[in-house]
Length: 304
Image (cartoon, rainbow, N blue to C red; front, side, top):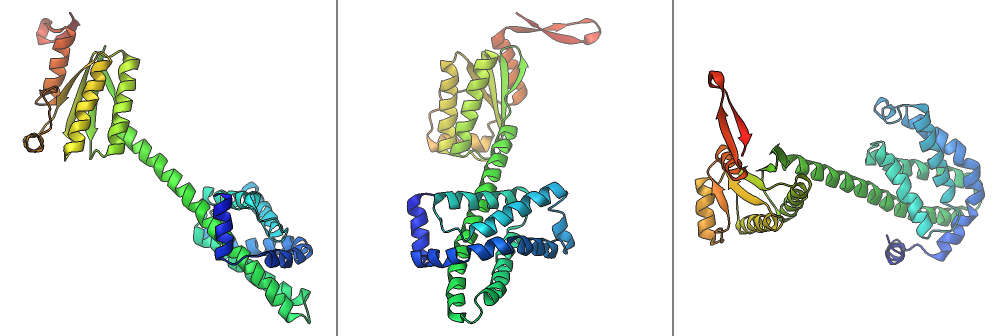
């Protein structure tokens, strides 16, 4: 949120200095009624069994109620700049953090409107027109707050989704060390540009950390290889070579091989082996490992 964006939103909802002046008149009433309004709201909310699960302990409930009381009072203090926006976004984030459904959070605003309307009637007895104007000003501000709440929920959810996607990417592209100086990178699933970049960065970091000399990249689990994927594979091999490591590519199916030929991608720099086992054996040969036959038919590797 920027100053320009906030100003634009204010203009869209037609929130003016006249509205600010009207809301300031409500400040004494807001301070007087904040406690009973919030307490009554949470009594109402917690009367629903499914809602009680979101407030598992007294500490959580007291914290949320305190924030709501501050919010209620803040509605009429008259300063609706960036600090106000930050406070509103924080409150929305707090409720999203406890997994309170946004439909329930938005229901709070409807409750506030009902409660304020009934109290305005009493506070402005005999001045119905003034009470109506004040109520309209409050509704404008509440609508702005509802938009900010949705922003806060959306931002938190997007952050959670990005974190989950990143975790899935890391899990789906593990770099495994199976021998001294030998790494395996099994790739599963589709490879888009972002994932390809992440795979390369992860592999190069692992090469440096493990001081690897040979890497086996297995693409058996990659269903489709297009031009971008093939080119990025070549770039990854070249980047590994600059760090002093050789790359063996395994798992090219006949369909993918034919596709790569049709695409015209230059794969002359790739060292390809049919399957993962063959790739590991080739890597071990490059590293100088020998198979030693022991007694009873057992065998083990010995570094050359």
